[in-house]
Length: 278
Image (cartoon, rainbow, N blue to C red):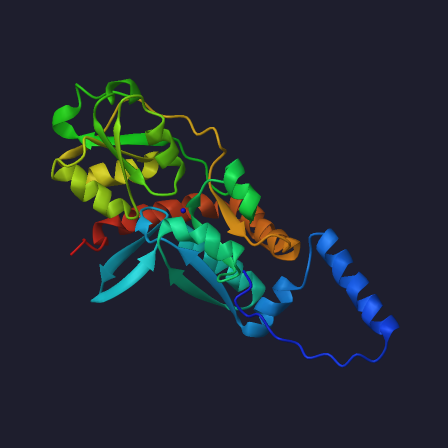
């Protein structure tokens, strides 16, 4: 399920050539060490700005509860813990999944957390935290096709959907003879599957399982696609090693005390309240 939003223009009086030269060397050293004062800037601003695409239960999704539209999920709970450990508030910026990495790279958000797989292409653009959750990939289908579609080999000539910019999109594009359709929103893909516009949707297995539980006419194909990229991680702008270290510290703590599993179970319990597409 993924930044220097508070850029400041500093007006510096040049006291002397030596002072300017030393300042330049210091900046270079910080850059070479892959560390800067990102954490200090976040604390100064009083908030951690996180970008995500809230259409991916159990990672992040909208619910209607007590008459209020809320974004909840595993990633939200993790982001809250990171913000708490930094001593700041959490600000969520919802965006299309395909825009998250670029927003991190450009410093529009501090982090991207949206069930993001840290593949090699993404690593060229941003840095990543340690893996916080591992999941295999699943094939979501109509229940009527349970016998005819058991795995990827049965998708030749079929209409296959996946989320744009995702690992699942690359898997779909690699299916021989498939008619691939990529959309920004997973809920829209599921709707198109239900209405017969798609024969299958490739998504992470927990997402597929939840979709099949919420929608009685859907099912998960028998074949599970192994995740060769290593799970989900948090995207952070390159050069912000201090923030990466803080995030990794929180992830380590959450794994050790069993909170990741608890957050996942809590999210699954909230799925019945999931907001329906209008």
